[in-house]
Image (cartoon, one colour):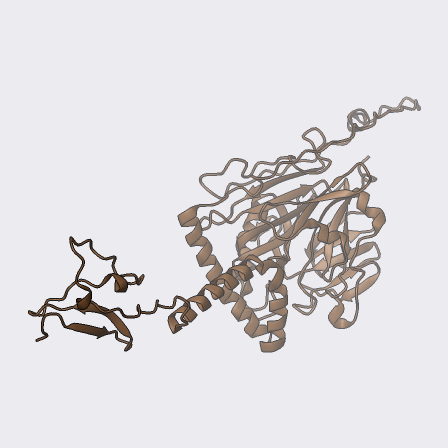
Length: 469
């Protein structure tokens, strides 16, 4: 036992000096001295009526402050985890831009089949994330909801109808109507509801936000279809174009589809066509990914093969679509053709081959028809008018259902996956240029890419009423 008046110096766990205490004879510790209480790590001294005698206290150096910058494994791990999360977030936000390079690099390192399998895992994971996100947060169910368009349309010139008196023979009534009123307006296909409850505007054709189109002068119209009951957020935007008033063009890219055969395309549209440009969209698969044929501008980039879905443009601007070798065959009046897989819609019915596995819908043995991803397609109505369709979270089957519901009589798939799928609409400006806009709010990339050189093939339509008037 310590005697009254003796002093005890404690030591910390690390061996450093601690505060000095005055100890009573019975062992009870007194409060720390004023000097020792000055340390930021010790409590402030209590106020006493009388300070303790100087002889009963001793002055010691205060304990050093703990270092806040001390590096520990826990801090290192926390910083590393934070950096990883930020990096993954940055990568995810730019996935549309970097995914093509990542995919091409993967194919060169581990091969096409393994890359396709990795893609299937990624699409399955993304699909689960989208389902959970929609269930918790909800989401848009109209791809055109955020679009606001203002366009100044020139007043059309008045038409003068001149009649010549002949031998008095009565002209057919239909010809008199055509001469008096002009051509019959484009007939809108009747859409089919694929859901019990439809969103506002779903399955309804409109000209809103489309270039050179009004309800009274319907050059183009659009609608959207939701073809998957289990994915309410899967939306297919459909653009309908009056085939009598537009001309479809096909342009091979610098690298695809013929680059793997050493046959490169121009990759750009001629400058003199840009003032009349209405819309442009992606082409089909890369040349080596299926060897689907393409012929354009007098050049065979990939040979056309029997049994494949094919869209052809004739020299007079007419369009033909069907199975090559059965519905369409080569003749001298063909200007351009593009093939891609098999038909989605055939003779007004969804093809039974939409759920077919192996390499029907791609060049690999992995069943890519089941990939839930962005997909695009072109089609023709029974009247022969042109359709383009694209949407997110689709399989080959749901894309086919959407096209059928929008009035497609025949249809074929084009490219898939973001950011390849893109439709741009183009609005004429006063200076002769055009302003491009994305057809759907959630489409990646910018339509202006079609005004630059492209590695991959694409299609575009220009205003051409030579077969209409």
